[in-house]
Image (cartoon, rainbow, N blue to C red; front, side, top):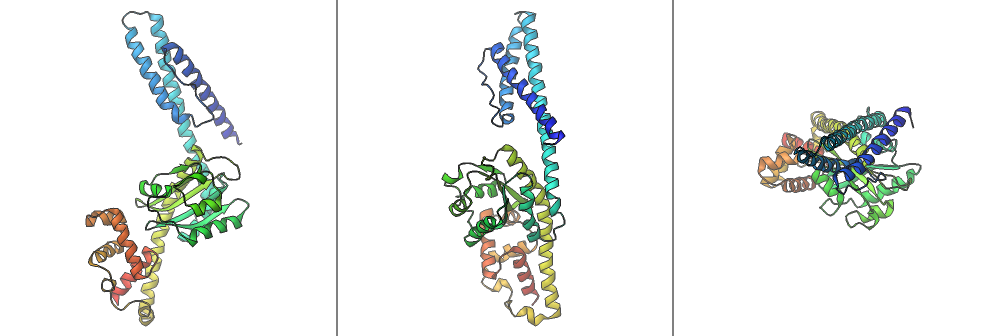
Length: 361
């Protein structure tokens, strides 16, 4: 534990003691039931509504005391109100300081991925960087048209286990059809903590079997408002459940990675297009070989799919495509999935390259 961490731990202990004393004094002074805080839980998250309840009760009692009950009672209530505000301010400052600490830790962990030149290179380095934050296992995945595609995993001291887990996921990529918790993360673009995973009916049974996870956290990697990937982390070797701090670390890390991921996805797409264009210019016959001679619009794409493909080629997200065509986002995703299958490609960038190349031929 470094000096700053030790100071922050001491300060948090001081705030916890003042909060505990305030709850006890408020219960006695106001005659209300204020539960004793449990500091084995992330108590700061539960303190705000309790402090709000105490404040309302104290303010109501203060207003009633103005009818001449006595200045001593009024002073006691005003003092109580002041203590409530002090504890609220200390908790706000502690939350802000904790976020700064998390940002510094994440920045240090991600230093090793900053020079990644491609999406694959970035995702290949992320899990090891995540384990430097204190996780025992970190998994990064792509999300492509409602399919969860595992990419790379790091398991502290057990690289073979990481390879085995990823192999299981790649052998049968889970569908994010609403049954899995990960589908909620993708739909809402919000992080989640999962507990009692071995008995949950909302996890992928093959992955849970091979990972033996009891709890884990997952945060979305968001690009242009859509979830393009997932970041998982757990504390398996430490034999403890993930907690609010773990969730915050994953969320901050995912937020930082999302910016780099978006930039590299664009660069990868440009590289695919550049490669297709150069091949077409230098050796048109070589390009025409594997590519159908007719534009994709005439190669089994429906009229609606052609509209979707045009918007896709213009760089629009599923959400924007749905708005433009006045359809649901789910329907837009379904169209994109059908287009990829019909064009015989596995990514949007490849579909765009195929579409543009065919239109030029």
